[in-house]
Length: 173
Image (cartoon, rainbow, N blue to C red):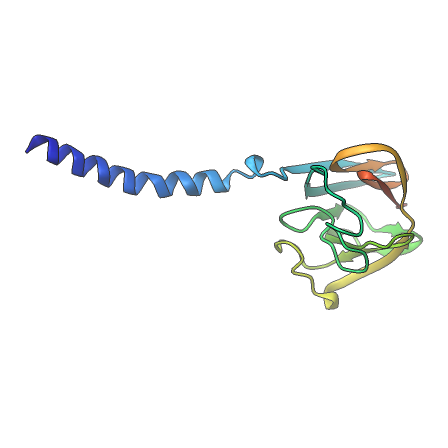
């Protein structure tokens, strides 16, 4: 009788605890295959913060396959990548007001479109072109070496995305 009482309570405890542990584990973004990352720095007097999830190559063909040419890409994994500017900036010679934007790209073999979109907080490519604040064209270049994980860098003259064998420089003043 006592054993049955303990077993029922143990089973009830497990039934309540298991979903809570699953929720807690799923809420831990650092345990994702594409963990969150942040790049920050100053361009002139402007503070720049880029928040993204960093996928790995994992022996996959990235450009033109995993990330298809000619289609909008969230410029990372999981939630859409965001970039925040503390002051108005000039991106590739074009004005963009200070604020936080989702960063999307349309990769191409020799030319990319970089998109700064006013909607933030969306998952994946929940992209609405009507929310675009700015689109600029940039040329990718060879990274010179393999980069297993996608990364962003804030440099004195702009931001740089690196992944696999590619770099994408975006000039910012």
